[in-house]
Image: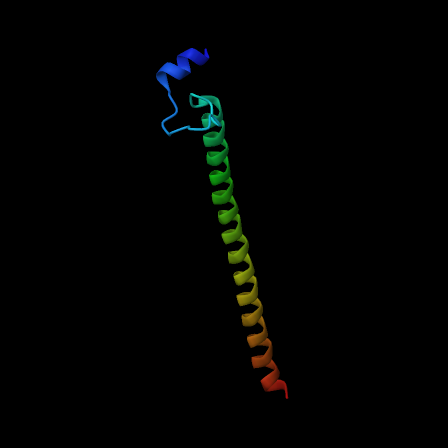
Length: 79
């Protein structure tokens, strides 16, 4: 198996001290790519949820402001 990778997927950078394998590890590359994609999807979903929560909070604050405007408007006629 390693001779297949050494022949077809040689390490494209100089390796003067022999610190790296003579071939690229395709399995590690695919696993890293897969984890990166999963993380990107998670960040996107987290951003969407944050937008939803922010919208709910702003709507809540806006409705409370309108409620208190009406209360103060009515209290103006009482006092």
